[in-house]
Length: 86
Image 1: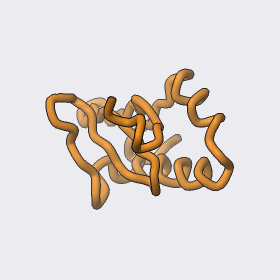
Image 2: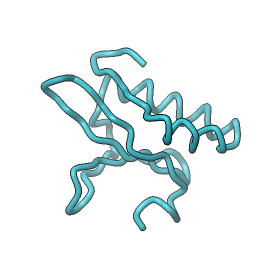
Image 3: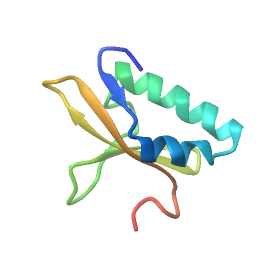
């Protein structure tokens, strides 16, 4: 996905996303497109004791890392909130 930042989706994350219901998947894809233009959107949080950030999409969480110099966002996981921090 292209924007001001390149969003990278590792194969493992793509596989996680394929298991999501279509309605949720569409919302996740839209959130990823938006991240390409603003990696720190309203409501983002820096995870404590980790290098990752998270945004909420309904009951799901997108966990990601940002390299501001290389202008790259690497998605670490797309998980239901009950699985996101364990």
